[in-house]
Image (cartoon, rainbow, N blue to C red):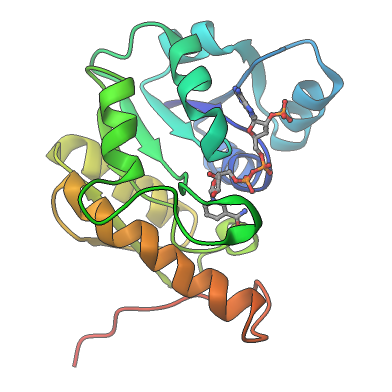
Length: 204
Ligand SMILES: NC(=O)c1ccc[n+]([C@@H]2O[C@H](COP(=O)([O-])OP(=O)(O)OC[C@H]3O[C@@H](n4cnc5c(N)ncnc54)[C@H](OP(=O)(O)O)[C@@H]3O)[C@@H](O)[C@H]2O)c1
């Protein structure tokens, strides 16, 4: 697949490297493609660098992994989203991880779908810390989205970095996935687990 990474920090940089290693064509879609940060993110991931508009135009799948406050600008910079599979890993976190900016009756995932009109949005890669994304080690990767083909692509990409995908249903279930991310954050940073763990759905 041709995958553009919109936000190449902890989450985007790790997944870019994992997918490039699986022989996907990966591009860092950067605000400033000539910046040292963008070039070193691409070098580390063995990816190419493009502008946001060029990267989204080129890609079949786009990973959104910017801070929540940057989401409107990042999505607007892309131009036309029609038909693109958009994997939304963001969480609408308040500063200092002090809860969510929105939720319950809507979600960040639904807001992303409004802003990236025409994209096939899947909420995924938001419920577990980035250090686990180099190798999911069989941990569950919960996802929600309205488009079956987009969710199938998300499931393939989750499996390729070691996760077991779990489909929670339509995109509005992002209302559950975003507060669920706070469960991981609370265990990691308030309850002493540290970042190297995840949760698994186990049938019995
Ligand atoms: N960290 C985790 O463990 C984790 C886990 C799951 C989900 N998440 C969510 O994933 C998202 C990214 O987290 P992160 O920790 O990976 O963030 P990060 O390391 O701070 O990286 C953010 C990336 O977004 C880019 N960016 C910032 N503003 C932008 C804009 N206006 N347009 C385009 N790109 C922009 C940054 O580029 P520059 O370098 O140019 O600033 C950087 O590459 C957040 O929404 C977070 O809540 C994080």
